[in-house]
Each structure stands twice: as structure tokens, then as C-alpha cells.
Length: 127
Length: 168
Image (cartoon, rainbow over all chains, first blue to last red; front, side):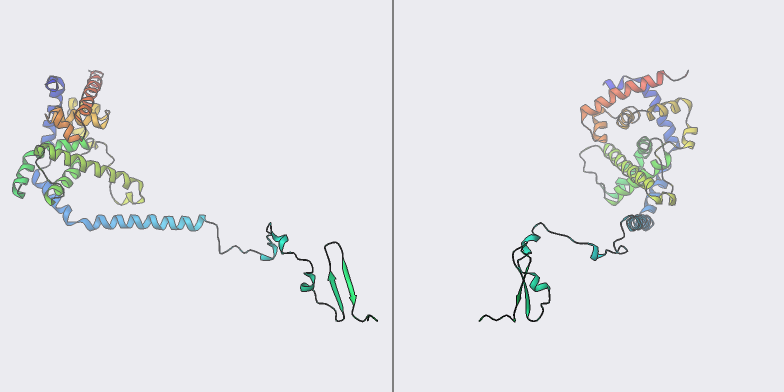
């Protein structure tokens, strides 16, 4: 096999293997440590929950301080007026009658726009 | 495989598995021990089951490799979170004690290996250190035979060059 024809590299790696084998922890100790991990998962879970809580609180605080304050801003409705493009359709001839209080005996009637007011004197009698 | 037989097999392969864990954790002894313990726990709890499709050694090495990768990802995530201060997080580098304990020649080999891409390092370790064939190395690394062969050739050439450049 081609991978076996490299004795120089093989020797170096085998020396490394001998060093690692001498420094390896005993199998029993590794197994005991592994079993001890099984008995202690809550600590890790608590840590992750604490991390998640920190992240959630951080995001909430960031949103609180960076978003525009909707409740603190007051809008003066008197200064706001929106006119729609079809508002002219709502203007009717003679709608002044509905918005003004007429004098008793005198009736103001607006005619077509630009025609001004025509006053009708109710005391005049036709013969 | 019975739990007793499983433990006997693990005990027999323990030194080789530790060497492989060291390679997977880039020479960080603490991380390697952590990965090995987590791997043994997975196997004994039945979360990793030997189906007999490969040799037990190849399967064990694949478990160790995957576990080390999981721990590496978790460690990287933990370093990003503010809770990193609560626990010591391995940074994936060889610890100072391990580096000092190495002989000069093996220290140079480890240093040269550390500069190679992970896949190349893994395949070279499996072939030269663990005496696996390239086919077995491909199974452990979870790559195709052709890919493993490419990593092997490129890694070998790069390692030779690095070792030739070393001071006399």
C-alpha cells in the first residue's frame, strides 16, 4: 500500500503515539469521570437557562431604549387635517343652510358657486 | 454487544482513542479528555450504538470525532455569550503543559500538523498514527474515499515541506 511507504513520517507519528499513550489518563478514571457527568446535568442546564435569561433581558432592554416612545408623544389633533382627493364631492350647493342659523323671516340661499347670496324677504306679499 | 464487552473494548482501545481525541481537539488535553468522557457516556447510555457495519475501532473514532466537533461548536457559542466568564472555555489550542511535555521532534511534528487544514490533519493522523487504511480513515472522517485520498496526498506533501523547513 502506498500509505505504508513513508517510514519517516510513520516514525515521527509513532513517537507521538508513544508519548500520548504514556500521558493518557487511566481508562477507569476516564470512565468514572464520564459517569460523574451523567449525575450532574442540572448545573449545565441552569447555566444555559441563565444565559438565555440574560439574552432575553438584554434584548428587551435594548428594544425599550431604542424604539420611539409611543406613549410619551402627544399629537395635537387640532393641527392635523387630512384632505382626501375626493373631498370636493362632499361639497353641495346650499350646504351653508345646514351650517348657519337663519334669521327668522329671512332666508339666505346660496345658489351656484360664485353667485353670492340671495335674500328673500318673507314680509313681501304678492298682490 | 453487552455492556461488559463494550467496556472491555473501550478499555483496549483507550490509549488510541485518547490519541485520536487529542488530534480532534488540536492538542488541547483538557478538551480531549472532555470529548473522550462525553463519547464514552454516549456509548454506555446507548445514544451511540455500534451497528457492526464498520470495525469497532473505526466506529469509536467516528463517535469521538463527532463528539469533539459538538463540544467545539458549544465552546465557540459559549465564548460569544456573556456567560463565558462563569466557566473555563477551551479555545481549541494546545495547552502549555502538553506543549512543554513534548519531546523536541514530536513537538515539531505537532506544531507542523497544527498549521494544516483540519481534514488533512485528521486523515494523516488516522493513517500514520492509528495505522488505518485510507478507506478506514475516510469512514471515520465521514468523507468519500477520493476526498480522503486527496486530503492524504496534499497533507503529506505539506507536512513534508513543513518538516524540511524546520531548523536543524
